[in-house]
Length: 197
Image 1 (cartoon, rainbow, N blue to C red):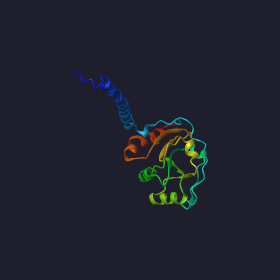
Image 2: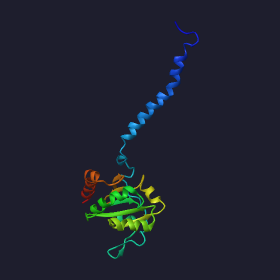
Image 3: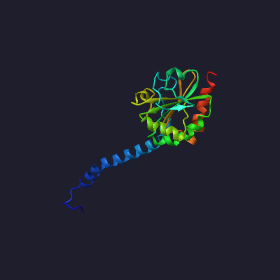
Image 4: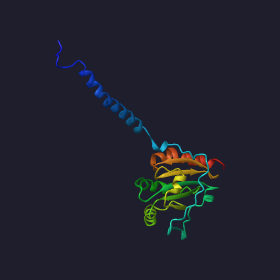
């Protein structure tokens, strides 16, 4: 026998009130698992297979290598050689982690190493390169971030492999790590070196 004081529709109403919470929890779980699976280093670049941006950047003032000022970025310098273009900043925590790996990689003189210093103070950028060593043959300063937008940069650090023809062959989003340097970056560099040789 049912209590006449409690309407029969009350359990149904409680369930309807809980429905939005159940739907929200299900969506939250779905987003959590999908986002947790995302590897940002696999984000494709629309620029792969296209010419590198024709961006001219001034040199990092006061940066000297072998007694000569290190030049800024001239788009023509990306043609005729396979280039590794690294977008970095002294304030970027992952850049500090990748710096020793980039310096070791720069021993491969088959490549030209180009740095794009992103929204950084010149003194801090020079101190950063003094601390870890300067792997770059060219360092262009992108003080307002516009050139990095043209390169399709999501955030620092990012690294591009540019072929001899000035075409972007590969883009690594995020820091160079011991895992991705051998598994991904070096094979992409080797492919670019073999192409057009």
